[in-house]
Image 1 (cartoon, rainbow, N blue to C red):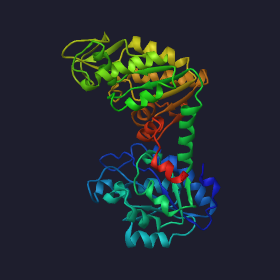
Image 2 (image 1 turned 135 degrees about the horizontal axis):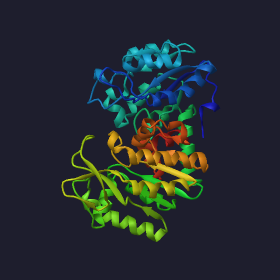
Image 3 (image 1 turned 90 degrees about the vertical axis):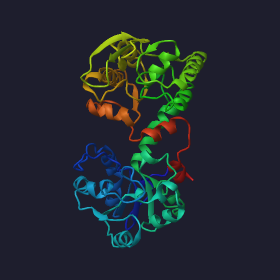
Length: 397
């Protein structure tokens, strides 16, 4: 793997694709800076070598042009404080302003370019746009695992202009190393915990995991489609009616492969989608007509936790319920705590798969109690499905 450790950046301008797509509140304060902090080791290595750094990222989903709320200028102060230096800012990612500021950048200095997605050419993977970006630096570094599954101009196309001077940053290397540990070198028993709203989002991952895992735990909104497919009553709970047949097929495949599938045996239901709703516990498949399931119940927690604590490898992707609401977070919290016990007391390797799972672990203050929390939800999913990530292929080619 070609990492930044294989390059001396002295007097070189390193063009780094980072993932600074961080959440901002209405006053443009960063509410979670994990992705920014994750990029600091790579930036610091280059500066310590005597190089300079040009950072490029996207933020949010602007609709076809510049929008102030998606400007990267909002994160400039926080980034400067993190690096303990004044980060320069170009109010465009290409054009005269960016070119001039990049040209005048001296060793030890950092320049942040404006949001790449202010140009539709970024997401289209436009080669001319990629070439304009490439001209700003001497070396290309990809440290944005969160966008590695996208064949965008800055994540894959740009690498063509750096045939020999292209490297993975430390974050990318660490993400790939941990994903590989799960993919190819998992100690047994291997338990995957799948949650979230939709079966359709996880089909390919589940099918891929059936060849690797010993246990597959299914919770969250997707569990209600399984319950309905098996003849249960789920009230107004989340349902993908067109995936019910698929759920039954997945259960049959798991049985044929000797995989132990665990579905919730009870559920916490509410009379409306509200933290202050009336709530009660019922057995799975026995939800009254006007009620909805919002969390796994205590018997499911006990069943799942017992399997988790005995595991040696754990992959968790997706919450067990609506953990954002305090009254329906218990199931997700209990699973998080069981993963911590397995990690600390049983020596298990635990990989938390980005997205909502990472948000849940952070909410419960358990980020440092598990083996690794991925910064890339979609990218990790596709990697685990066996897909080749464009951002990874571009460096390896």
